[in-house]
Length: 255
Image 1 (cartoon, helix red, strand yellow):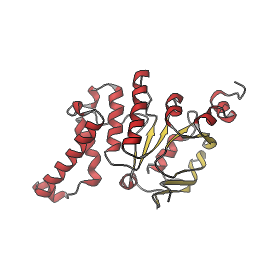
Image 2 (cartoon, one colour; image 1 turned 135 degrees about the vertical axis):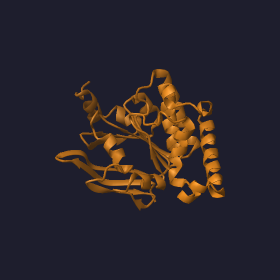
Image 3 (cartoon, helix red, strand yellow; image 1 turned 120 degrees about the horizontal axis):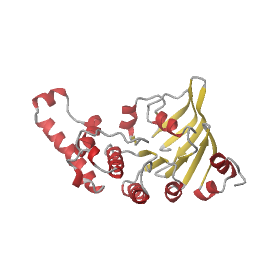
Image 4 (cartoon, helix red, strand yellow; image 1 turned 180 degrees about the vertical axis):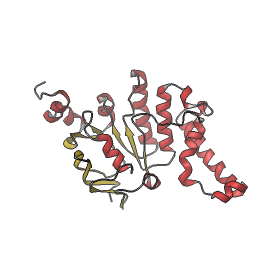
């Protein structure tokens, strides 16, 4: 059984077709890339998978379950987590609370337990805090545990968002332009981090990225879309030398 299988995915905004007949498949814990020019439909694909959009056509299977049109929290509970192009953190909450709040789907207690603060509430709060602290230690973020993200460098904020996604223990991690806004030093650290996460957590990673150095150094398989349609897929070397890809990015396949 495939981890993720997408067949004939199409999404329209009124008369505009953002994604057309898109298909792909994750057989296991691959690290794959999804690239294309601005407006090609890449983030729309991620939004459909994670439940923010309902597809116009097509089928999405994850771990044997159909997740087409499923709500975001339900998709997350099955094991799909994501980050966003623009970092979305709770900037007035501590780093620890940013991680803990992602555990709402796995609280282990009800509203009554919360009000009376009984043993079940206390045990589950302790369990979730222990999980969060361990994750922050793994990602070398524990020194910022009481800081608010707004007071931290942009590169650290990006790392926090990835940590929050990992806190739900996903089988598939969707990274939407993780290198956006990072300087060259931070980009190199990001490459090391993603490579480490892929190995340490043994999960599938699918990333959208405009910085080709990131994609080419990390991904074993790359799919390219333009105007919502797949125009190429293959290894990094095959993609770098594909005339259709060169034309989509540069406008002339002779360049």
